[in-house]
Image (cartoon, rainbow, N blue to C red):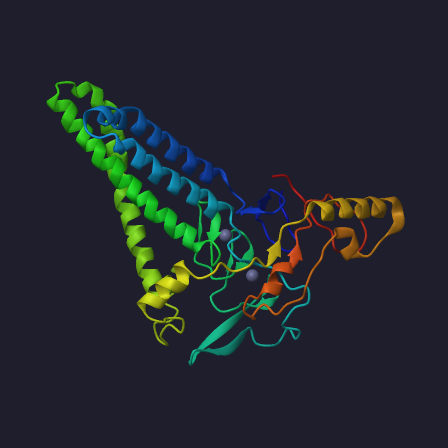
Length: 334
Ligand SMILES: [Zn+2]
Ligand SMILES: [Zn+2]
């Protein structure tokens, strides 16, 4: 299901509970690669070493694999922190400046106006050109995961990077052990699969190690990838830096922030279907009634609060392609 008015090109599943970027194909490739490579590891080197070395090799490997797999899916489906667009532009005068200065922890930073989302982006938010939404705590858009990495799914992404690195090391190490043991046992031909899997793990190890090292540094410094690449705080100093321990705790252990857009509830879908049907029949309700939209105006620059949880309702479960007024929600298929 594709929604347009408030949430750019993101695709939804499970009535809006799952949110991904517009292109999921690379995510399917990532998942298939993980399953195939680990399946070969399990079928050949892990099985051989289960009998000849230790029974824990496939079990510990499978635990690491499941952690990485679940964290990948959770990162891919988690709303990264989509900021709903303002219906009334925050910058009413078109000649007004596109920047606004605010002070954070004694350091002046600029808020940039997003002409697509109609508000001054909160600190650390950025507009993803692929998802066409502003994302709170925007880190980057990851094509392998098919989603933005933002404030709400960063820790899952970090966990995935950690476990995929451990998995790669595990697969490489025991593929090498299998090759050596098979050669010693005079059955080297049985280790052909281990050579292929080991080579793949060896090639993959260096990028994932560098990625883990890069993000460990970002967590330690309380920076996002976007802020680091653009050298946003080089001159002023990072206003969010609280020291190594607090930075790690705030990035990895702080309570998860609420969604700004909540999934549609089944009864709301039914209610809106009835409304949309009556609109087609000519009763011409108001635009917001027809679209079934419940929206709470908020200040995008304000910090997230519990009230943000009731921000907007995904109305795109409906095919309310009625002709009245201007609020028409274009709905595609999942
Ligand atoms: Zn935006
Ligand atoms: Zn994105």
